[in-house]
Image 1: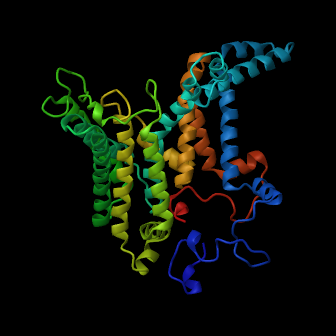
Image 2 (image 1 turned 90 degrees about the vertical axis):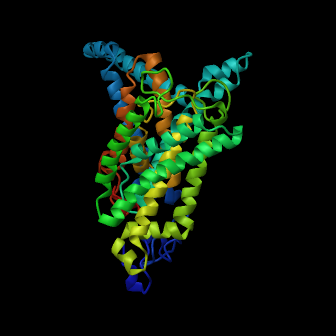
Image 3 (image 1 turned 180 degrees about the vertical axis):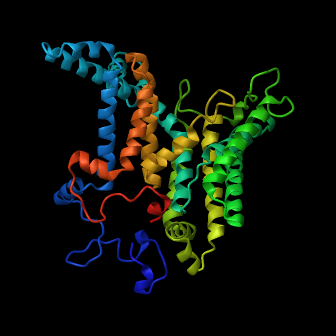
Length: 440
């Protein structure tokens, strides 16, 4: 990234520098977006555009996942023992095993041809959309925690504390859900706002300590995660706090029906208002980062804190505000779970949403639209993995391996270029996996 001060401008991220948003021709002109022509598409593929790298990473991860499916299928392994005199039988068994597993994965996350056929013979039409609804339901908390991590990334920081911020939002939403009596729509809205505030407070603590002491946010967020884990355990274990009456387990009371977020229809889990909240949050974050003064400050601090200070930006204030917003988004993720399902808050409710948000943000390259797509991809893998295991016996752990491989390969573009023989370009390709690489 060239120094903007050489051109007489104040320091700005390269992605927002004047003149880089338009394509030009001839030598020495700034690179911009090429027109969408056949040659441009071929060039993007052969040179490994970031979107092409991501698609190839998903493909490579699925291929490796197929090898794991074969390795876990004893029928296929026995068929390969006789490969020397019956090669077609071994190849047929391999194809049958892998195609059955991935077909079940697809049918559990996108749609099943059987439900479409049944709908034409008096079956339920809603059943056609249930896999998509399940994917959206699984993706909802991942999108929000991914946005939480992405906002911090764009400000040049790692938010490892989305899990603790999730718990902060969950505690406030749960308490407001069962301890406060309000009209039906207002009650749900108050709980959602409370969840955002609860997560924002936990994020603000991290930002404030970093701004005042210079402590590294990674250490602060990891330690605060453990504080929140133990706080949740204490509150759910005490009858005088948040433990449900008559319970000995770590479980909170059920929230009131007026505080729940409605589903599309049918038995949960189903997509509903929570998914709309996630999409609205993604749109809000996209506007914040690309259209607002605050977003400009985030990107500038993420690119170079020293340059931001020279431009008169209060870097410490940006740190605090970025973590406050990031924490609030993680709190919203908790609201979609606490208010979007029939089960009460337990000690295990936070699951892996906070840490999955890191992988979603990495895969989405810390861009709101990319985070939504990455969340939907991971939601599809989570939703379809359950059916895959039930229908074929393939362990759902294979899905976790696939998700990890996708992120690993996206974070290592040279490996994808080597695997698929893509041309090397000078500086083209995805940026390094680090907050400053995403600040543009």
